[in-house]
Image (cartoon, rainbow, N blue to C red; front, side, top):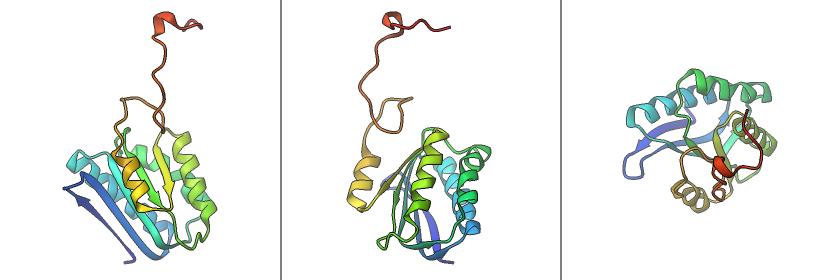
Length: 148
């Protein structure tokens, strides 16, 4: 098996480490195990290290992953930092994954360096924010557009 998924209690995160060729089946199995560990440990952080991986996952498979996450009960506030391959092999598949996850409301970001990924995961965000921290919004009572 060219990958493993572990809970890292000292950091409160689930670590996915993948090497070599990764298939659509591998990604589905990784996701299921990651979600299981997130729920079991009440964690919300994932560090997915694909720096030595070769993704052969189809775009169609990636497109359906956020729906699979939701069906599997992935915590809505989970943040996923993905270390992209050093070779940048099929980088567009990682960018596509990031996009479809963000469009579905999941917090996913891509990184070249582990230190940057870990720093992003350690950021404290207010509940209900978008993928990146944003300045505080105006209270609804002073909003310029009425809510209907």
